[in-house]
Each structure stands twice: as structure tokens, then as C-alpha cells.
Image 1 (cartoon, rainbow, N blue to C red):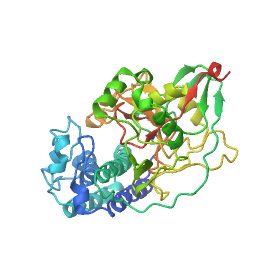
Image 2 (image 1 turned 90 degrees about the horizontal axis):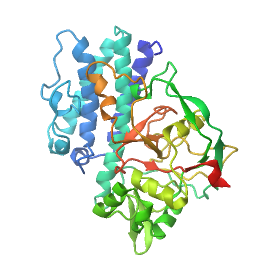
Image 3 (image 1 turned 120 degrees about the vertical axis):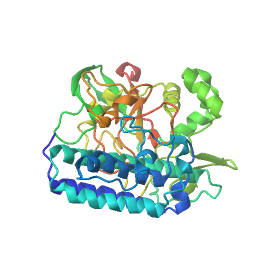
Image 4 (image 1 turned 90 degrees about the vertical axis):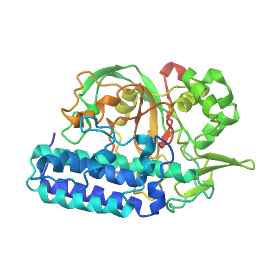
Length: 420
């Protein structure tokens, strides 16, 4: 790891914590308390949990005569760290009407002040833990927006979270295939900059030649799949996927609404007409895989995606752009790959598993990633609600295949022989 300085960690901490405070500003106290489904968490809980992380993993071990801000918070805002102790049941986080939102904000300010006081005398291990806490909070910033979107989508008023920038009227760029020769290539994080443990160790993989689509699949292209009976054709679907869409009665992406024959999409800016040229999002892995079968293609592996994206600059439509929704890309500007970063997380066909030689960190922090390496699928690239600077080619996001409230979309892959 790179040598950390108190100055850079203080700046990072101040920036990340300030962004979380701004994200909560558009919400009422009622908005911040409600839990719309067991997989989601109230916005207030997100604010408290990321603060709990700093209190538990930094202050508790470093402060002389440590005293918790409130002894009950240790259980209430523990997510899944069994080595720390018991947790409040996840599906019941919406029952925590107390502490109030102002009390949670007071908790944040208290811990912020205490962290600031110890940064100058912190050693490299402590600074690294604070840095991890900042990246952890960035993950929860995206989760907070995902969860708020799901909550507001259930309201018949379709209220906006925030007014977003006006869409630019322009056609989507024509898709084309970008070839990769493959070979024996290195994957995984081998730099000295920050990375999560699940991105290591770097190792060699053999990749056969393949081609990757130049841009994500659009709403219009996915609507063709819907109109062609994609959700009524069992041969397109994995067995678990077909069972899921029958049970849940899915017939379109999560936030699409058909009203009097016209398609709309709920966004963080409210209900809008479906932009046919913008990337489709809020798809499960099952839906992404079925579309690939319909299109005569497949999803890329995480290593195919990583090797072809490694040389691309990490620029795109991230949190902070003012859009909070995937945007259509109107110009190639000489680039082969478009929107490889930002806009939508791209499903891969790779199971979320440990790399050979992976070792989880010691202690409770070792529960951060390793314990989830089963039955989930890797996504790459970041989305329009991912904080800028948070992702890289080696970053491994992961969700269960039925999940679709995250900003997840599709980029096709093919074997070269399929192009002839």
C-alpha cells in the first residue's frame, strides 16, 4: 500500500463525510426513516452505520478511556460484523424511529470531531482503516440513493428526490464490436493505491480472443426484447430466472411503467418518458442473460471486461455530474469503448469468488468482503450514482442474480467466430 499522510486522509475524510451530509438534504425526516424492502435500508440508518464504522474500528481502539456516543448504537447500526457482536435484524431497520434524524446527525458530528483529533497522531494502520472507512462510506452513498429511489418509486405521486439536469436530445451512437486478442494476461490490483481485499492478489489468466460491444444496450434495444415476447419465452431464460419472473411477475425493467400505451421510467428526478437512446438499467442478472440469448450474444467474464477496460480513462457519468441517471452518449469522439465507466454497472457472467491466494484481513474487518463470496455475480464499471474516483478496472461489485434495484445494465460480448 502507498504511504498515507494525515493531510491526505483528513481531506478525504472531510470530502466524503460532507457529501453524505449533502445527499440527505433533499429528504424529509419521514423519507429518511422508511425501509421499502428487506434488501434496502433507511437513509438515516446508512448515515448512522458509516459513522458506527469509524467509531467501532478507529475510535474504540485508539481513544484513551473510549466511551461510545450511545451504548445501544453498537448493536443498532452494526450491519453484519459478527465478530463485533449482535445486530438489529436487517428487515426491521425501518422500525428504528429513534434515534431521530437530528440525533443521528449529532452522532455524525461527534464522531467527525473525534476522528479529526486523532488523525495527526495516527499510525499507518489507523490511517489505512480511516481510508477504508471513507471508501466504505462511498459505497453507502450509492446504496442510499438506490434505496431512496426504490422508496420513492412506491409512492403514487412519483415524487422526485432531486431535480436533475435536462436531458440532451441526441441519438445514440451506433454499436460496433471491439476486438480483443486475449492471451495470458494479468488481472487484479497490483498498484500501491487503495483497493479492496477482494481485488487481490494479482494473477495471470488465459483469455481466448473475444469481442466486446462498444456501448451498453439502450432502453430502445431492450424494449425490442420486451415487445418480442422476451418475458414470455422460457427458452431464453436460466431456470432460476424463469422461476423468478413467474413468481414476481416481471415483464419489464424495475422502474418502467406503461401508461396508456406509452412507456415511462421512474428516475431520481421523478417519472419521465422513457429515453429510448439511454442505457437500460435496473436489470437483474437473469434479465441481462436472457437478453443476451435473444440477441445471439453473451455477457463478458469479469476478466474479459477488466483487461479491455484497463487502458481506458476512468471518466464518465458519476455521482456529482448532476444527472443521477444513465445518459445517452451522442458522440464516439474517436473512442472505441463508450461509457465503460459510469452510467450503469455492467453485469458479467462471472461468479463472485476469491482469487487464488486471497486472504481476508484479520479481525472483524476481514468480514468486509470475503464472507460474501458465494452465490453472487460480479458487476463492473460503476454507475451514475457511484462517487467519482471510487471505481477502477479491478473493482469488483457483486449482487445476487435476482437483485435489480442497483443501476445495472448490459454490455454484450461475443466470440470472434460469431461475427463472421
